[in-house]
Length: 462
Image 1 (tube, rainbow, N blue to C red):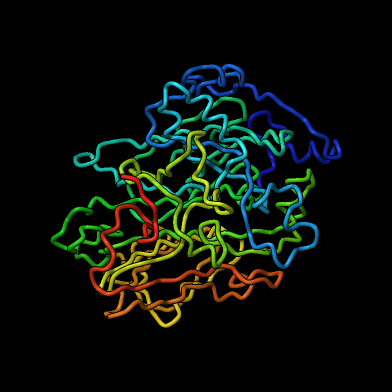
Image 2: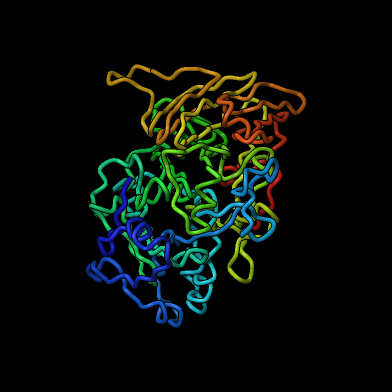
């Protein structure tokens, strides 16, 4: 666990211990050369017409917010949190996708400021295309700003994006705060630049106060698509998990599933200026894409297909907020898997909880074609992929698995769940946990998928 705030070298955890939890405000000084990030006072950032750059592929903002988890049974006075505005129950830290706001030159500052207290769980899913000097000679640029915490203005933590598992990332862009740059609150931003070269499924998270920030919700899933994509000679869809050369990782639909956990006491502590003791850790809730079952089966929040080029672009409202979908407003990503008979479905699974996972497909099997963004193939080219009904992987690991839908004449449902009982059901005894469904429809029922995790239940805008 990293307890240092890289913006001033002073641990806010030590400060809370010394000051007895008193509130403290700190204006972070600009210690980074201005070519690497623009430094603006908060007042200027809010007043300027366009304080942020507009040429990034994606732009994330770190902040806090509230989400909704099952209210029954209650967990002492920790859950539901009495400070949570209905219909929400649980305090989180997180990220928001503000790419569209940063490109709006007329009111970007106003819209970006309104994202405070609107963090989403899990962090936004995004994807990249493999760099190639001929077919894709473009660096990927991602900006990060830090809006600060509205519920906890005394927390002056910086934020970073650590690209967990990315190979050959130079320290400057790695997001580990002792070797790279953290973004303090107050109108600053930092640009990450990559040439993604290794296809597969990865994860990202804030690496400042990493145990706390990861658990509180600053975690997301990212994947790299191979340059082999588009070659329909190997597989009809032209979509692949890896550069396999023979179509063995070809698929028709893809679904990203991020496993995380919530320890209710820690979330309550952060909302009420208390200090969690992580040695007492117990995961009360197991989540997939920020939701517990049966909410995992609810549709994705409405989104715009035409602008979902690197990330799902939700159909935000006039205030720049996520669509109002009731208690799931800030948990927009569904975990429901749909496909047609005979199709191949790529499941991209990531575990960013602190416990091991054992995701079991009841009544079905999958073929593991990649692990930790590495194809299942030996140095001599030997195929080491394998079939299984249970995917076992630990914290910080990812798996790429292909489910081949059986031939059916009516809708057939397979249950995908974590056989670890503490994660299949809420630890307090309630119904829920890491559980979703794969629904197989007769041939030709569902139209081709246009964005990851898209299902027939979704509301889309062209």
